[in-house]
Length: 78
Image 1 (cartoon, rainbow, N blue to C red):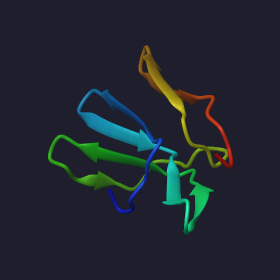
Image 2 (image 1 turned 45 degrees about the vertical axis):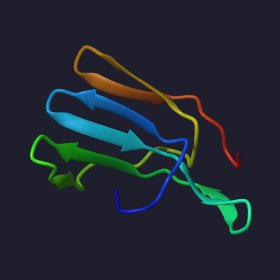
Image 3 (image 1 turned 180 degrees about the vertical axis):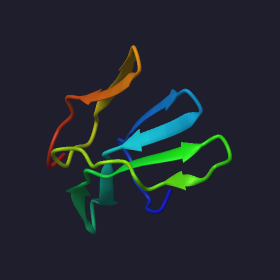
């Protein structure tokens, strides 16, 4: 992962590991939600052509349906 995050959503789909949202920072440095989506293929190559979430969020749910990965819910300013 390019950054250290927690409360991130993670799911595997086809040959990809996909991570979305999360929180950067901590009690002493301040917290910030992110809207970044990161996907790695089976060779651990970073795919940068993934769109961001519509809003910065942590604690997101993730699921698949048909050929789609859905990220939903979550919280802001956690």
